[in-house]
Amino acid sequence: MAAGRKDARRNYERLLTAAQAAFAEHGVGASLNDIARNAGVGNVTLYRHFPTRQALLEALLGESLRGLRTRADELLTSPAPDEALSTWLDGAVEHAMTYRGLVDALVDSLDDPASDLHATCQAVKDAGAQLLAKAQQAGAVRPDLDASVLFSLIASVAWASERTPAHRDQLLAVMLDGLRKGASPATIERAS
Image 1: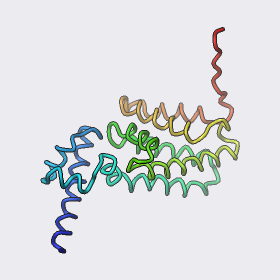
Image 2 (image 1 turned 45 degrees about the horizontal axis):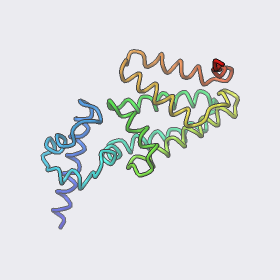
Image 3 (image 1 turned 45 degrees about the vertical axis):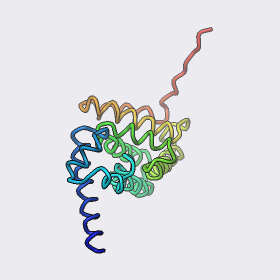
Image 4 (image 1 turned 90 degrees about the horizontal axis):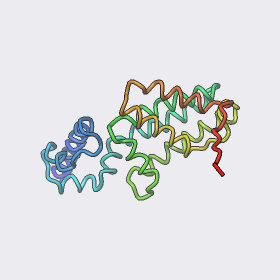
């Protein structure tokens, strides 16, 4: 019995290693069949460990996503809530760029409570919402924003930065400038 558990653990680790390499090279849309083959296991073994692509992403990224939540908790004690939010947003954008196509998977997971990534992504969103609220209470960030808007901004900057990495810092700076109190909400006039 112990040998079976040891084999299962070894296969699990090999699958994670193969997935990490495949996602790094091809993005999160990499072939699961290729991942299983490169790990030296069959598809049945892959799906026994990871029944969905989101389950595989949760296994690969769950710890780092939980790290974003923990970092937000640490930053909540900062005497400068606007700087704390900026620091956290920088890390959140960077995390969303871990693998090509990841931002789409994370956004989809937030919208799908049945996703294997949903609970972890929701916890990160809630942590970001606390930082946003603290910065708003301090008067440093516009009051007309909520966590959904904040995460749409993170996704937008990560998505655009994934395509043009050289613009990442500038895009992040523009986002941060737009969050600051005093930045006026855009008005859209409808033509009559």
